[in-house]
Length: 306
Image 1 (cartoon, one colour):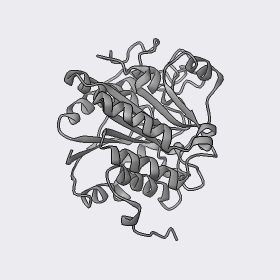
Image 2 (tube, helix red, strand yellow):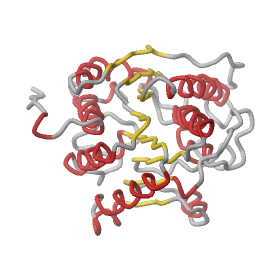
Image 3 (cartoon, one colour):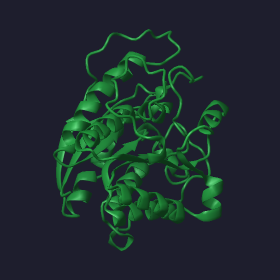
Image 4 (cartoon, one colour):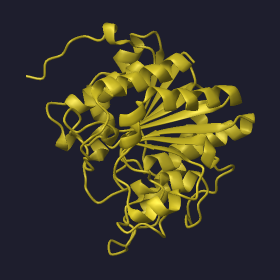
């Protein structure tokens, strides 16, 4: 796919801490479009979306910004489905609640084509809650629950075809609450925590998953959360969890995705520029996106953050 479509989603409704709405413009400022153009892609920027019309939320409700997030899901689902027919969409977040809509949209497109949808979730968290199970009331912890068809998402767009559990692979886990841990035990989701990664590395389980996607001739959506990375070099996230992927490990994952040629859509989520240091997290995420689309380490310029 030679066409890349940037879709800004300044969505800040998935949690109570503000700042992710600045993420899309931070990626632009960090040079995402030029970085991808330099790799030979034609890059179109659709600008920043806004949520579909929705009723006002009750600020006292347990679920934070429930209706606004449904509005975002509707808008992003339509945008994702449209973009898939024109190129490879990159959804610029925004918090991880944007994936409620991005995955719903790209999987609807895959269903129309009769193609199985796969999802690689790079994250410290499973995000397998539902609005009925979340203690925090924050919907950025629910996307995998939604797009795999868990109950409890009344009011959200109906999925044409949920993503089968066995088509989802989560890597980088290191912060999972007991309710999610218990629920995950009964699923076929492929989940790799950092203890497993310490023992086997990223390459083996990722290669196995990519081989499954290739054999099925599937579409692959990659969702990259800033907190997949260790906060020592990617601090601009509201859910910092020590012990994440190193820079080299993260680039290995992206380069393997590039080598596979399977990625059909991408999320870049949970960047909070308010918490960044001289824009370095935004630049790291731009570099990782470029790696996933063909840039190699020896092509990467040296940068100073002073």
